[in-house]
Structures are given as C-alpha cells and as structure tokens.
Length: 472
Image (cartoon, rainbow, N blue to C red; front, top):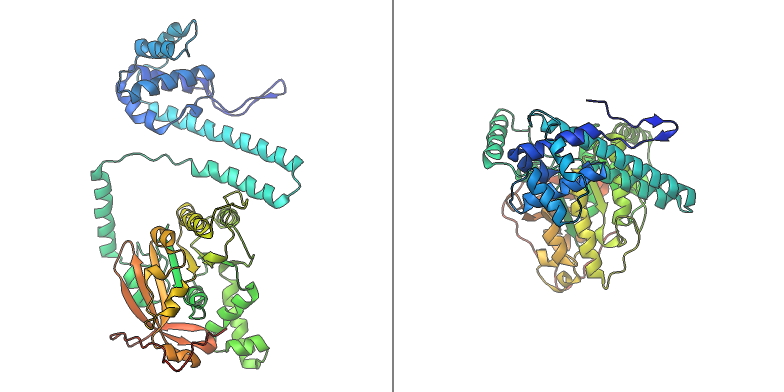
C-alpha cells in the first residue's frame, strides 16, 4: 500500500489521502457485516477524501442506522433512492469487493484514514490562520482564533465508544489492587491540608471546585495557601495557572512569600524588612522561581481568553495541574472566541460562565478552583453558617460544581483579632462525603493551617452591639 503524504506534482500540492486505504475500508464494510458495527459509529464521512467514497460510506451508514444489511445490492439501492449514485456505481461496488481478500485489517485502514483526515484539517486550519493574519487588525483576536482552531483538531482525535461493563469493572479491580499496594498512587493533587486531602483524596482531574466566602474571610488567601503549600513541599513539577481579576500579580506574590516565611505581610508591603527577613524572602523567591507557577492579572477577562491562555500553557508545559480563578463574578461574559455575550441578565451570564469553567476543567484535564461571591442574604441572618443557597446566582454554580467549599469565621466577633478560627465547610462533594474542618488563621502571614482541635464546631453569631468590620 502506498505511503500517504502531501506530495507536490508539477507544482500542485495534494491534500493527504490514501485512495487504496479508502477502497479497502469500504470493501471491508461490503464483505463483512461485523465490521460495520465496529467502524461506522466511530467515523464520519470526512475520513474519506474521495467524493465518491464519501457517498458510498454515507449509504452504508444509512443502512446501518436502519438496521439493514450492507452489501453491493443494498448499498446500490440506497444510493439510487437518495439520488447519490452515478451511472457506473454498481460496477464500482462490485470492484470494491475484491480490493482486499478479507476484512481482518480494517482497523489499520481506519487508522490511515484518521491520520490523513487530521492532516487535512490541520492544513485547512493553517490556511485559514494565514488568511486571517493577512486581513487582521487585532493580533490578539487572531492568536486566540488560531489557538482555538488547532486545539479543536487535537480535542477531536479521541473517539469514544461503548464498552462492556466487564472491561470497566476489570480496570476498577486492578485500580483497587494497586491502591492496596500504594495508597497515594491514584491520589489527586495534594493541597497539603491533611484532613481535607483525606476527605477528597486530593483535587481530582476534571473537577470544578467552587470556593466561596463573605468579603475578607479569606477565600483568596486559602487558594493561595494551596499554592504556597505546593511551593513549600518542593513540588516544582506542578504546573499552576492563577487568574487574578481583582488583585495585581505583585500583591499575590507578596502573600505567597508572607505565607512561606516568617516575614509579615505588613513588613513586605511597607518595605520594612531587616537583613534576616531579606534572606528569608530570597529563599522564598528561589523556591517559587523553581516552580511552574504562572499568574495573569488581566481584569474583566472572559472564559474564552482563559481557555486560550490555558491551551497555550498546556502546549508549552505539556500539562496543567491546577487552575485558580479569582473570582467568578468579575469575569466578563463572552463566548470561546472571546467576543462579548449579550445575555438578557447577569444570572444568565453567570450560568454560561459557570458551565464554561466546568468545560475548562474537563478539557484541560485538571482541577479548576473558582472563587465566588456569596449572596447578601447571609448578612441578614444571625447565623452566618453558609448554605448552598447563599452562592450568588447559585443555581448554575451549584449544579456545575463537583465540590463546593465555604469559609466562615467560627466566632464572628473575632474579626478584630489577628488570629482566629475559620471553618472550611465541604457543602457539596459529588464523589465523596461532607465535613467541616477547623482552620487556624494567622493574619500577619496570611496563613491557614488545620487546627489541632477538631472537636465539635460551635459558631457564635456576631454580638448585637457590634457591627461586622471587614478587613482589607
């Protein structure tokens, strides 16, 4: 069988295709009834380059969908009925049946057609990128469109299929056996908060984690503490993308360094550090620099722009281990091309953004932590214990999330203190249990640690005589 590649004949380039492989696969469909069930559900007409072969395949697919036999007679009749036949089609169908002696190698023919189809799509996308580049006046929009076109080709190369339950069950038993030998083998990304990691088995790939809290309770700090823990543990192979829509990148780094040193955030902000603190900060800088942590502090960023930047990072680093977005309600509604959406209301926009964040987690194959505001209704209650209904524009967010986390102060009157207890409530956990974990907050170093005392949590409401005071 001839090798398939884009060749130049007398100055004319031809799209990648393999005429013989197309004939051979059609022959397999015509001579072996079993092959149709293995092939037709997984491929489309664009696997074929020859227009005549496309029509024959479509006829085979129509017959398969009607649960009818596929052979020379039925295919010819179907093509006649749909007016896609030509004057010599019957002779050609008979000729096809002798293309290969058996259907044993149909899988190889499918692989060849799949390869050529991907190459053709790549050439088409590249041509479109070139044409757009010539006419474009917006380099960022052109880059985003180019990345999206290439990524779509990549994301469609996997062909799913129905599998027998025994195959899935065997994989599960094998996984359990391996976990028995090594408990950490299938653990997700560790946050290095021990109780939380035991509950969730780490942050799992493809999961959307919503982290919500009232203003100044510490949702940004908690998310950054996860990053700080990863830095402190020397996990320099982890690729992390942080999108900060509210806080400049420099302020994020200030917090990371304060958490991973004994230098207070106030000293770092004021530049009031002594020689020992400077040495500590230099060590923190060195440790952070060895990690693959990337920060984007673009305000009013759209889901489409986040997709584009994450694709670029995944292409550069070959993976992404964690994406953090701070925060959902500051995102600009838009489609995946980055164009602004014109929704009828903000709740509809949030619904679309929330859904895109779940798709982002699935496509990037990593956990995505999205910070979220809470509804003002919680401020009207004496009991400040968060509930799922307290999520701002809660319906879609709650539905799309795999895990919903809430942070709240154990004692509301502790707001004036620099150190106090904060409760992490796991309010939704699609694949596990729920729990409340007591954390200890140290304001000077914007640091959370799990409290040694995990006894019964008793939340005290704010005293009637005092007013809530939010910290910056």
